[in-house]
Image 1 (tube, rainbow, N blue to C red):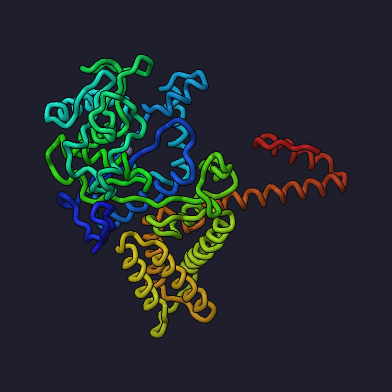
Image 2: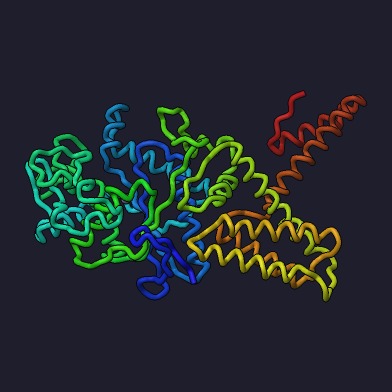
Length: 458
Ligand SMILES: [Zn+2]
């Protein structure tokens, strides 16, 4: 049985899909105005693994992530750079996809853009006005939080903490805490609406998109911890008011913060690290492994030292896996007293036990380390029989699928190494020939290498 911690109930609950074996998963996507940072990477790697694990458990998962390509931050930055806001958004959307590909984050099924769902957004706002949950003013349309008594149920805030104006200062608002669904504006990008031209508020983008593709009730909504209030709280207010169906989402999941060497990551502190910065000097798989070393809900502390430690641990597992693959070529004997199958059983069970406890990767990985150590020690004296070896390899293969890690060195890697070594050998021979004044042969080798596309400088 899989248990998931639900932010709404603040409890670990047994997981049950809303309908059959299909899980509908929505995670807040990026606001595309600058490169994503390693805190984003932590969140998206976590949900990548969550989807992989659900699939391993037999669920069919439909994973949706929105692209916020309309936002004040995008507009501000585009004005500063003298660029068209939507062009700026497309540029950073593309870079976001490139970053995710490099991180091996590839489980999202569809990325709907806010700018392409204006009709759905307007439709949902109209419903909210008709039902008495929203009202227009000369500056925009707002959600009336006094009409939704459940406002605050996700963040567990008191009324006085909810009724605070954050961004929108509008003297026509009924309550300080009312948030914008539509903002009337004169400057672009603009869309027509029944209330005048302008653009949508941030929160309504998500619920208009999720209603369109997932319906008014679905299984899991995820995002970073910092999105609980006001963003996710506002989403609940909008969708549950518009549809009248409660709850909008069965399980709310939130990832913890990422700190850098014990401090909050921020541009002013100069410790802001984008995914691109990170991948210039570090392997994406090592970062992934580092992310797994902390439970997804806990704060994670990034440092070069911690990353190096992850690299070492990851290599230890990879080394064993590659050694086990090499054993496949050996003549393996059946043995009645081999200890491998027993260990595999024990640690495999532990791994899945912890993954079932709200995707608790640190103790799950600890079980894999224990198995690795035991097998390494035993291999000095004895070897597993072929069927047992295959069982062990099949477990490591499952780990690759679930964690999105590559444990077996690719053939490609070996081939590149070999060809580099061969090239070095040929160049060495040619040097020798030149020393021996065998010019003709040396030149022939040179011509042949140039034919193959190599550049030779003497
Ligand atoms: Zn969102």
